[in-house]
Each structure stands twice: as C-alpha cells, then as structure tokens.
Length: 133
Length: 173
Image (cartoon, rainbow over all chains, first blue to last red; front, side, top):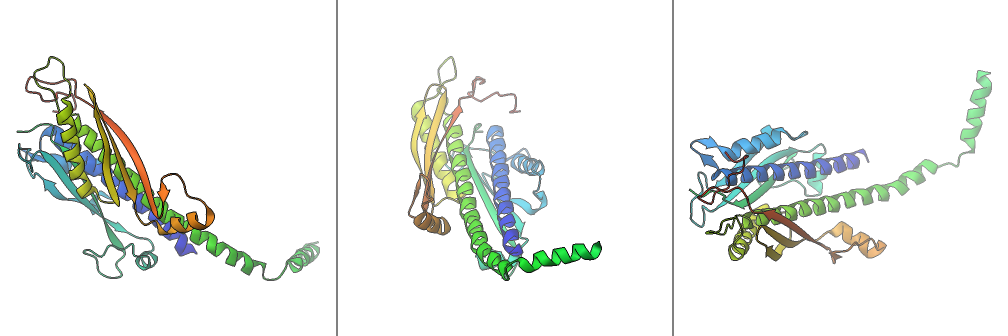
C-alpha cells in the first residue's frame, strides 16, 4: 500500500516535471524567435533561456535536462526549414518506486536498460521566427 | 489505580469484534487502487490539456507576426496570419506529442489580434472508462475512452515596430 501511495506521488512529480520541461522549452523557443535564431554570433540564445527557465523552477534538477534538437541551429533564414524554430528537449526522471512503474509500463524503453529506475521525459515546441536574417 | 485503568482498557479491547482490521484492510484496497487509477488518467488529461494550450498559444503567436506592410499603424494581414498559424500548428503538433489527436478548429484574425481555437483528445483512458461505464462519472467531452478538449488562445500584433517591420519591444534586444 505504501508503494502504491509512493507511485501516486511519483506520478505527480512526473506530470510536474513534464510541464516544467515543456514550459522551459517554450521559453527557449520564444527567446530564439524574438532574437532571430537559436545561436546568434556564438551566443546560445535558446540554451541560455532554457537553463534559466529550469533553474527558476523548484523541484527540477536542471542538470538532468538538455536540449536535444535545435532547428535551425543558428539564425532564422527565409527558407521553409529556417522560418520556424523547432526545439526538442529531454529530462532524465528518477522514480521513487521503479518496480511498480516498470510493471505498469511507465518506464520508457528508449535508451533505458530493463529495471532501470529512470525514464526519459521529452518535450518540444515550435514557433515562427519573429526576425528573419 | 494503574491496574484499574489497565483492566478498563483491556475490557474495551475485548469488546471489539475480531477481524475488523482485516475487513477494513480488504475494503481499503479497492479504494486505493481506484485513487491510483484515477491519478494515472487525470495526469494524462492534465498533460494533454497543457499540450493543447501550448499548441494554441504558439499558433496564435505565430499568426500575430503576419504584419501588414505599407500601413501607418501595425496591423495584421488576415490571410498571412491564418497561414502562419496553421504552419506553426502543424510543426508544433509533430513535436509536442502527448495528445492522441489535435486539429485547428478556427483561426480568427482581426486587425491587431489572432485567436486560435484547437481541439484535441487524450486516447484510451482505460481506467476512467471503467469508472464512467460502471459508476456514471463521465464529464463533458468524454466518450468511449477518449477525452476531448477545446482550447482558445489569442495573441496581439506587436505595436512597436521599426521601419523594417521588426518588433521593437523592450524585451527584445
């Protein structure tokens, strides 16, 4: 019964973390859109905004999060691929109750070994570039 | 005095029906499983709603970038606003995930604002399906294991633009 209650707590943490990751990714996309690219003159605009957003979120370990895909990986251009910024991110989430979560299929198989106590949460966001170079 | 109190307590304990603890335990197991099951489905609905709000927000924000050129005051080009909103919605939908399905219901541009309404559903809510079938707990938007939600979000055109149609908001450096 205690494990079941812990699993419910885990679910709450999972949803909270997923939403925090989604918010941080959206923040990164907005910053990149307003500045006209994800990396401008060597400044990692999206990465900085993403890290700042996560650091300001209590209960989330920013070290477990990373941006996995930036498109365009530079400034916005007037092409079909360059006009819209698409950013994907992921977070390695550690469960308190790995056994029950594995049993219920909550463990993500991608990149994880069987019986692992973690799962990978992903988030993504897209927005049209406000400035096109 | 202490002996009398102990005897009194023992007397009360003896009057409790035997096995009541076991009955309570057995009765609580389904209740706790029900709470756990609902927590799973509710989590999925919350996450799905969040994703839908994000899709609507991003589509509206992109639509609001369709500045009308050649006008004194910043205003929106309605046709371009619809195109921008739809393009971004398609791009977002492919990477946001979470939802079983999502589509644009309407894109309504005015001179200075775009409102995007989107509809999406969370599929195969098995636990909630059991509750709604047998306990009549289904809310509006719920049908056959899927929960459908509709969300509207608006975004306004940037009213402070430079001569090259770029937004000159103070937060954009």
